[in-house]
Length: 309
Image (cartoon, rainbow, N blue to C red):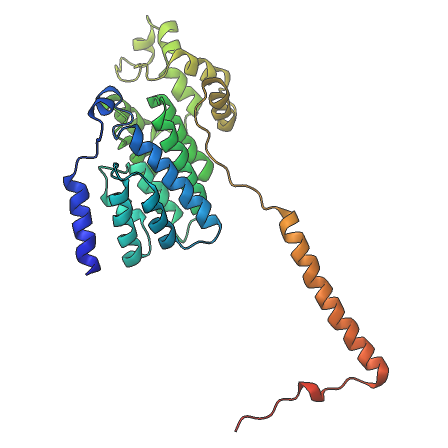
């Protein structure tokens, strides 16, 4: 039965360790699954977004991509569970939330917001967001880059800071210090500029205020912890009291951090020709009606219909 298959597949994924390469997970805690898993995740999310844009059903896409990804990874089993959840519930964000040891809470939150019928967040943009994040983790990621990418995703798409930052803080890439800081700024976003928050917790601020930092911030040891480097501090200092989008753009240019995808404006040229064709058809019908009326009147008998018995 489908329910038993779903339960068995989920139990198999849970029982099998997801770290295929122990050395990678130990040397790089920001990408605990290993490089192969994130490369296949990037391919999975990218293929899903591309084929859904061509109006291919999601179930067919999941089945086809399941055959494409490497069988040595754990992604095929995760896709199988997502496919079963999609058939039963109509969404697959719940399956990602149940597979919390493989998908991060931020990934589940983004897909959940994209599948929300009341929201305006496009599912294709959400899949592209996850594709770029997985591709970044497959390279040489940093905690600063992961946080800024996820935070910019929340800002640009208006996904909500309360639950969004909770999902960011639950990411296994962040240690306890980062989690406490993210939980703290969740109450400060909107009242304090994000550039000020980054600058105060940067190495540049710590070097400039090494003697008086403890007195200036009330002696809070966690407040003057340098979570960002000196370069991030300089960029944040240069973009104080400016639009946060300028701050994120500077991070993309200077530090090569991943850029959040944006919603592309509709192409008017693609819709212009069909509109012209429909208007020409309407004009032809009107002209034919005028010609028939000039020749001797309009014949309504051809529109008559026999009454049904």
